[in-house]
Image (cartoon, rainbow over all chains, first blue to last red; front, side, top):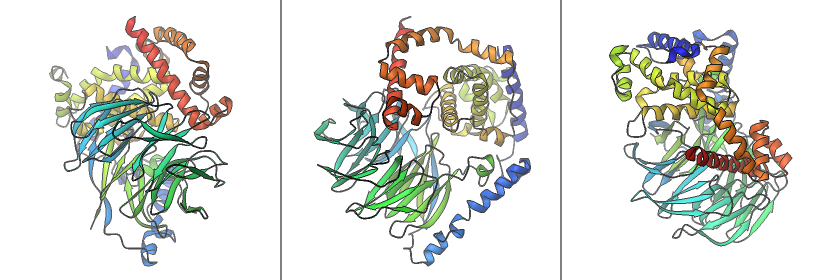
Length: 370
Length: 191
């Protein structure tokens, strides 16, 4: 039947040849990849090597310099210690309630963080490709912006125990000391809604949010929402009222993290900003191409894309597409740089002593090792 | 390759390490499903062909990662295809990393193959369903889908034309597509 389409036959032959020629060798050793490159790719490769790998050495904020400049010493270097394979695309991941949880288009996978194996899968219906997951307050929570449903999963029985229809499309969910909060991106009147962990339903009075509010971070007494408009770019909110402050930067989106009265967030231009929740100036950290950030174990973790998506960059280190930057939050200096597989759209989840990077096909486990 | 044709998909994957030809049988079994899946989502035979090649190259490279309890081999392949498609939509081009790693040259697609892929996808009935389903969408959602999907405008421009934020535009398009899928699914199921 495949002979009916010439392309199918030609691809089959090419695939067979590629497999035969690759038999017995490890894929894409840098040297062979280098030999196959065009001159332009070679230049790109050399530039990538010159720019990406020694970034922390060349930059005055780099790892060795920063350590010498008095940044606190990390308890160890981050390294990828294992990889979790999920059967289909992972849209988001969360560490909590005794497991790692990954959400795909129709499924939530439960992953044993001891063995790094999928131990259960839970069907969560819905058809949106925008889903987010978080774990805490005795449950696992999944939002789906297409169906506008918040799903609650019992982390012990791994059963769906609640489905709540929301009055808007949820685009972010965060859990912390100030409770569970969801951003509803209703046109013209986005809201921040607190969720009652027992019932899984909204509780209290929704807080109006600035237009375009996408991401939220949560602290002990405050929630920070980051929006994408240029005029009211970021706001700090107590759990009951909101105050807006303009940052003067356009198109804010991306992730945010909050700790010890400070917030860091990524803009859609992939820049990182830092602000104090008590007010004062907002400063930009000297990092570009940041896809995601997270705060964990006293460190700020930034997922940085390579300078370009060229094949040359990908061959800098086999399978390494991005850099995970471990940053000292007090000085903004890079402490360590780790090549990881995270690509565009990757998500970071943090646990105790572990960082998970979900890149759609698999999840990498990064730990601090001595 | 006849010796492999009685093997299950899982057995073929396991055999591939020892006998790479087994992967060829797996390819023959599932290439049409993958092509159909990708063409239906791209309506572009060239992009679907590139993504199919990348999908199988990535599947071969990642064959040891397949876990039978997660999904069928075809489901796994379609998951890879979906992932490749997602990347392609974000970068506006098909990835070629897996093909590069396998040393696979780009396989050009001829007009006859393009026509056959379109026939394979059998989109005509879906087109009729889609036309009807679009008419059922609320006007706001229909316009959002038309701007983003029909005219391929970036979300920034979709938002500007709709007079809403980019996030709201994304949500509106997502809701429109979800509703479209629901309408078409219901009708196709009832047909």
